[in-house]
Image 1: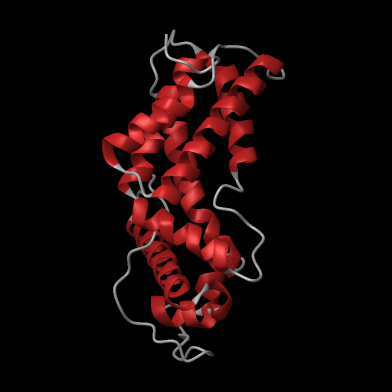
Image 2 (image 1 turned 120 degrees about the vertical axis):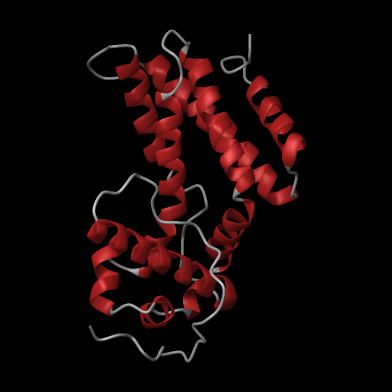
Length: 222
């Protein structure tokens, strides 16, 4: 394999990696595990470089050199460096899907959403440094037109579909379900923005989560 041995910008590519991972599903087979590890290392290398030098200054060649992979390998994982920025949101989306699936049958839609999003709130607080880095990268880039929460509309649609299926219903989701999901996602987004802006953490951050959800009568705990 031809490695990207020299970055075009002369960016140093060694150092500690501490960025979001790139997947969490169980993986079978040595080849699949190696591929997943390589992809995760690519994500970690990219986010470290983005944090050190800024998104706009880092090239695919820089990322390849840091991750010790070839350009062809990089493009098997990602179409462009912009695609790397979707990894943290994808990780949260997968966890949200799992959390919603773990809610006991018979739980109301509002309570199920709140329980699932509470798990994501705990995940956010555990991975605070990575999400702070992600937010800083997207906020300081001259070329990106993303926010740290730009993928939420897609998650609203997926949550709406899953809530409908959870009730054993078929056909398009009801307006009530769509509105409920939109309100829950809005409450979570407001909470997340406040957490990242203020630095509140731990029990105080979870209390703020409850405050955000209790402010909406549709989401309030009974």
